[in-house]
Image (cartoon, rainbow, N blue to C red):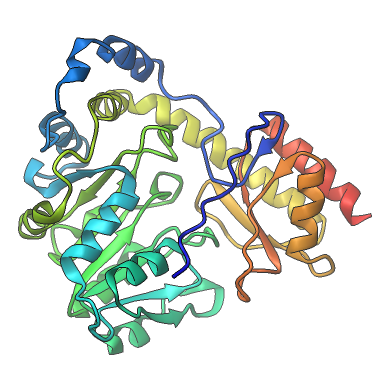
Length: 340
């Protein structure tokens, strides 16, 4: 098998990093203070294996019960738990999802020993509801907003699919804070829905590796059976709880990114890029004359990193993280020079 390949993390800090959808703004000062206070002799002790304080805070913030929350080492850990709990090795069509999407899903399916059933998205990345329903998979994955397109599927569309689906429907909401709504509202009426969240993007904590899964008490109880005993360390638990205690800081940064995103989209379209409607902290752009690989290499040579995918459906475009106004300005200026 081929392992998942993350975006490049260069040692040279002079690069402008717009390739891994990290938040360009720092985490809350409240989080940093909580971490400083937590660096003490207690680090010799194991962390709470059930993340009780974090789950209680998350339950309060998101309006669910604590036993409807599972904490993980990033949402990638939670995805791995879901595959282990729901998918049998060698079973046909146990997992299904629309493509192109987050390529880690392919890797997790291979690790679990199953061939995923992938269904192409419809026009403008519309959910292929009927085709997915026809698979009848135990595990259905919907990345929303989708990566790498940034496109969004409404909660009503997901609800219609979930109510007719036979298996678990996982809504991977890594970028939901940048979108118009969340599938969390479906938990009360769709007991087969599991919603994943991460602290990596909107909360500026990619370096801490924290994720949350929300679902029915019955599903969360089953997922707890297969999670690693101590899957979150003491500092991550502290950082996540502190981040949830300072939502205005996160929300202010999200507002800045959304405003900057719209400016960036306008500038890219002025250069004849086709840019998909994004509700995330990145955009996917395709130029009619210069291919994605050439643009990626040209930008990299100029000290700007963006994400280029070699898969046929994506290789003509670039996924570009929304940076600060200054970073975006450097990107646009460099693109203009490459296109002339």
